[in-house]
Length: 150
Length: 150
DNA sequence: ATAGACCTTAAAGTATGGTTTAAGTCAAGG
DNA sequence: CCTTGACTTAAACCATACTTTAAGGTCTAT
Image 1 (cartoon, protein in one colour):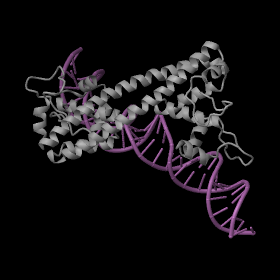
Image 2 (cartoon, rainbow over the protein chains, first blue to last red; image 1 turned 90 degrees about the vertical axis):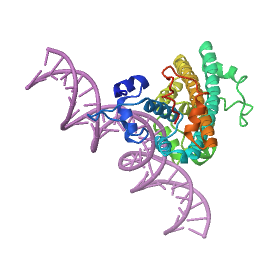
Image 3 (cartoon, protein in one colour; image 1 turned 180 degrees about the horizontal axis):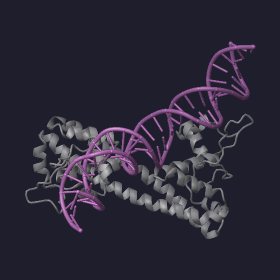
Image 4 (cartoon, helix red, strand yellow; image 1 turned 45 degrees about the horizontal axis):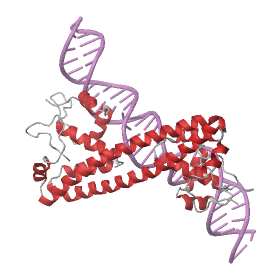
């Protein structure tokens, strides 16, 4: 009998308005309807929603997700193209994870700085102590004029 | 003498329109001007732009970045609050990196599936082979009716 | 048979994060 | 002197990804 939109909301956490929006935009192929025009989602629809969530959360724009799903509906002739899209997404995601790990180091350093500042009650004190730890950039002068964490 | 907006664009890769936008929104404190009203950025401004970029790219909304930068301008009385904000951002970032790693596994699986499909020239064939590799969800039936990768 | 819950649609509205435009100021070079 | 190029502002505009609204259909219980 399929899943009602209510059930899909509960199973996926995606709001009903968004489910309709995805279908209208072609991310999800037209969902089967009962005799009253009410949607009945299948297991395959749920799987596709899982893929949409994955691609969306890894920053694929919805227009590109739409193109991918369109290719999925066109049979084996589009396998190569689909493989390329997935590969590109994998590369982009690896790059993004690496980037975030770099930003994490920045945040970690900021937190250590604030730990020192809070412990000593003074940012000026933290800056004095912090210059022993911070990795130095080329333009840092002898006078430490650019030591500034914010 | 400070850096012209042109130089800051070159140094940071941030467009001039965005630099002005950040300043207008209070992410960056009012930049010093020369006698003609032209902006002259300091090294401290560049450091703050680095922090803004970091926070922005780790998904802090600009309104929250603004509040953080505001606290930064209010002296040692706000150290505790600032530490908390940085700590919250660290936690959110760790969670995000973990999430992306999960999504990466999804994408990696998808790619292996398409590798098999492309090699055999048929998605049906890939589905047959793939069910040996895919981690099974609870609702998967004996008939594999929900094996669907997209 | 009437209320209330739950579904439908198309269209308008919203939030975020900028970018573009129009109109003007200023300094330097020909 | 006048053009060129780089800067300034405020305000309008844009893209993305939804969300909300308004108007209406259908099922169920009282």
